[in-house]
Image 1 (spheres, helix red, strand yellow):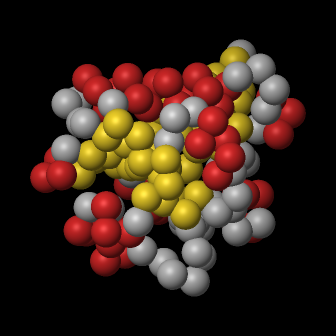
Image 2 (image 1 turned 90 degrees about the horizontal axis):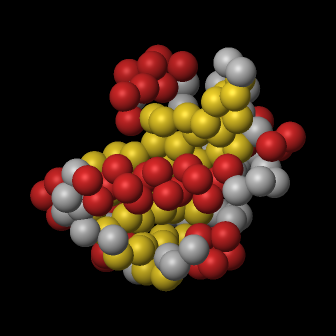
Length: 133
């Protein structure tokens, strides 16, 4: 919550209430050090389309140098591959260059899974990026 809330307030991440986070906690994975959470990310599966969404990738501002975001991305990719997914997608409003530098390509909303298309928030104007696994 300490890492996510400031980014939600800035509009970088979609707001998630505590109940929603607790209900989806099995989707999240962390980087920890000495009991402190340094970063987190979530992976949401769309098995019908053999694709997964990387969401809520966030690193504590004091630990942003050092490749922790890259480690979270690598972990998400490995988990998605292990689950048999063929691609990973992300919605981003601010860190588009970071994803492009890591092999993602901008995509059209029509490439999103049907369930995700129906939930797409046009007001946020998130860009869609995809990466084959």
